[in-house]
Every structure is written in structure tokens, then in C-alpha cells.
Length: 141
Image (tube, rainbow, N blue to C red; front, side, top):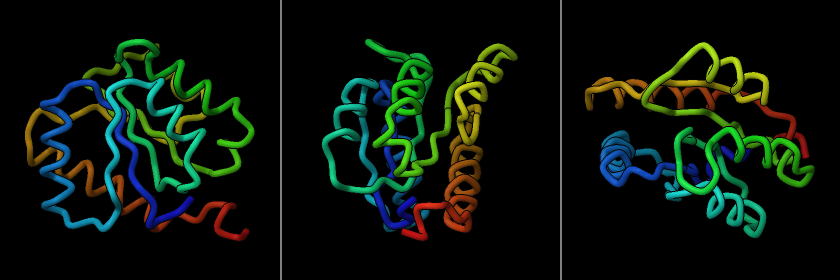
């Protein structure tokens, strides 16, 4: 995990992307934020880039491949697995099945998007601060 690397946001809703961009700017994190509208684009980027991302925030319901399919492709990719990129679901609704399925794919977090800017800001702040403190095996390479 590269704490100064980009934060990958996989979100097909432009309004949600704009709100997240506003919050990241307000919170002043130095990480570059890289947005993808679908999972295939994100997977292609992750496979081709030499950049080590800090973390992935992924919606579940997206066109082409959903968040579960994307997580599975990353989880079963040995090259991406060794990068120790925290993968978190960040979605508008949670069900027992979706949360259970997510953790079966070894996600590192499942968050429901708050319906207010302040709530969204607080959640993003907690997520980023937690992962900035966390230690990963890749830090010992």
C-alpha cells in the first residue's frame, strides 16, 4: 500500500464524482484522485500502470462489470494482489447479501454513502485517516 499513491474511485454517477471531488479538495489530501466510470477501465488502468494506488473506492452497481466482478478479478490477479491495495465498497444501499458477498471476496470495507455532504465528508475522512495509519506487508519491500 502506497499512502501517497492515487485514490482510485470507481463511480459511474457524475454527480457523485463531483461531490467526492469537492470533499477531497476540502479535506486537502495530497493523493491524486483518479475516477473511472466503469470497472473495466479501472482494471485496465490497474494492470497497466506502474503507479501503486493508495486505495480503491468502488461502487457496486456499474455498467459493463459490477463491483463484485471487478473485486473478484483484482482478488484473483496475482500481480494486483501483491500490491496490497485496500478495496472498499462505497455504495448507495446495502443488503445482508451484498455485505456478505463483499466480505467473501475479502474486501477491506463496506460503506453506505451518506445522503448529506457533511455525512459524506465525515465518512471519507474516517476512511482515509484509517488507511493512512494502517500498516501493510508491501511497506516492508
